[in-house]
Length: 133
Image 1 (cartoon, rainbow, N blue to C red):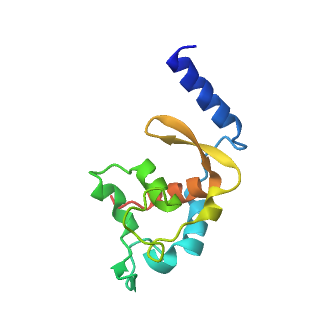
Image 2 (tube, one colour):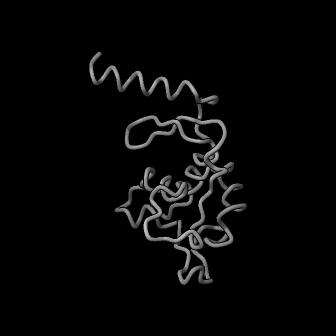
């Protein structure tokens, strides 16, 4: 089996676990955002006013602008799920373990369809929808 065939087979096996074939829309993500993120990042994602762990929550409507106009899906997902937390302590950006549970949906990440927990994909869709022009 070639490397390409093996990659394709791995992708198909991963996507087979996806119970819905569509990425959720921004509305589904907005609900999760209000429940989990708005306390720090504001209701519209424009950043927090208060200090949390000595830092102000960043403006999430400017993610693409801070990345040369491209919305960095992989980095955003990693920040939310905790894999790219970097120097942020848990009291600044908590882990959202419950968002990593449940059914998965295929999400395009850097040209590859990637099985992603539906709530995490919904938050991604919402954040992508609120980017400043």
